[in-house]
Length: 190
Image 1 (cartoon, rainbow, N blue to C red):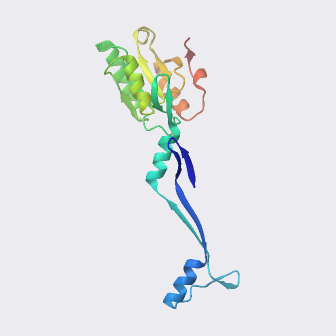
Image 2 (image 1 turned 90 degrees about the vertical axis):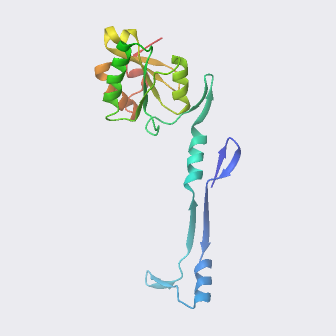
Image 3 (image 1 turned 180 degrees about the vertical axis):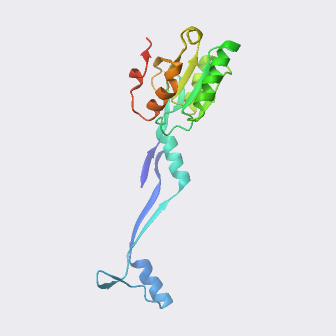
């Protein structure tokens, strides 16, 4: 089985119908009868040999989900396959923003593999999470303090929605499970 990769066609798995060749050869050399009863008849079984290496399949998945966008390279894992489901990002390094971000991180990490990212510019943090395949970035900004809501950014199209902190965990869960479209999960920002 071949897969069309960024570097041309590569073999991912070998599937070989060996017929009765292997068992008949073994039967000749060993002198042991390899026939079995099946449906009232004596038959020599046929062999279907499958060869799947884990490493090649992992590389093919990485190749399949690798994309280059206007912002740079990224892994576009479906949300349910992404190793990291969301990044929690305070827009600035100030105590009031980081406190909200840490609380959100602590609540979400109970159910999801999430990361807390406060290093570098907001654009660099988005890019870093795009590169590792994180589907959603949750940004804590000035409105988060007054309105108790956050911005969720979609990796695949950079669209953003606002969601109440109290609804965040359920919203992320439904997005990961594919039970709601991103644009309908909150208030879409222009």
